[in-house]
Image (cartoon, rainbow, N blue to C red; front, top):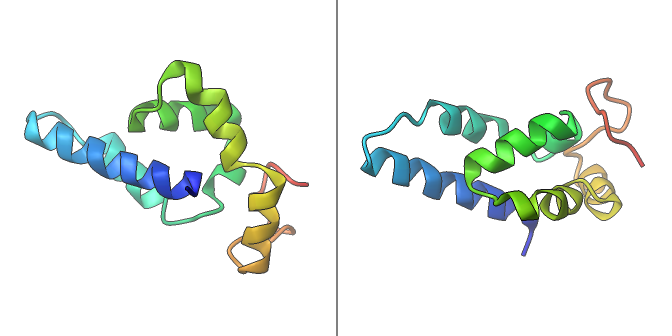
Amino acid sequence: MDEFILIKVMNEAMQRSLKDKGENTEKNDKIEEFLKDEAFFYKISKQNAFKILICVGVIKEELERVYRKLVCPFVYYKLIRENKLNPNDKAIRIKF
């Protein structure tokens, strides 16, 4: 399964869970907006990516593995082919 789609689904589930508990969903609402950009993880630091992954429910032991899947060369070139990532964009922090 596409790791990015999985993160979006996890965020949606976390939002529902927080709402059901009457807890604040502000962070996950912002994450939902960020995830509209499939190249998002190429534009942020690894530290910030980990914070986001934790907010959506990725367990600590899986952070590195999930992050590597999100920003691997295969995904990078796929996003370029689909015109979802411009390698010349100054906001891109991870390039292959």
